[in-house]
Image 1 (cartoon, rainbow, N blue to C red):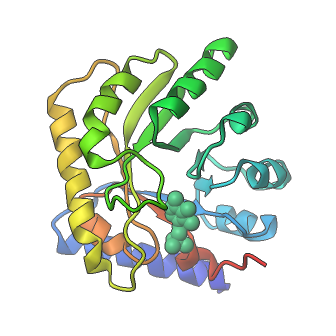
Image 2 (cartoon, rainbow, N blue to C red; image 1 turned 180 degrees about the vertical axis):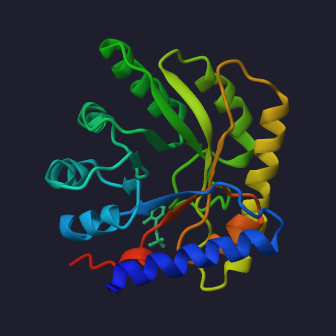
Length: 233
Ligand SMILES: *Cc1c(COP(=O)(O)O)cnc(C)c1O
């Protein structure tokens, strides 16, 4: 078995086991393979092994790699900081989900570009649960207001929330933030905001996906546990 095949098998077993342990047996979890820095050949291999969702965090890198993929995929997700001058390039890659909409300004610019093309776009609102300055996303305190404003933009369809945990070897440090995101989702759900659904709760990366599942995630963004360490050189 190849390294990626082995990694995928391990991850899928861990996901199933964690779901069983927290009483979510058999629930559907969307596994998004984060392919940033990894070559097209490895991505193709993962796709042939059953991966259907892939994600990149840089428009230029996605633009270069996606046309070279030979295996089909179901959905391309964008998960990185989106500069407004790259919006049109991103849209030309047909992202199924833009997970990293974390400011009203970006939402408005995205909405404007989509409107011109007569397109709509599924998005997640990125919440900076940990309130770290280096991270994108709206703070928990301002999230509700911003979400109501984004919900009124006609070309954007909010489909859930995304967050990143704290950089720590101890995933327990992130648990409270995942819990807060889940609580925010519950609160928003009860507000019945027109045109919005809360189907995706995207939290959990290689170091903290088990905790994320325990706290209610249904979308995981996994890079290194599938593809190995990233080499930024
Ligand atoms: C890189 C990245 C991931 C995946 O990180 P791993 O720790 O390798 O699983 C997930 N989400 C975002 C937004 C990322 O940039």
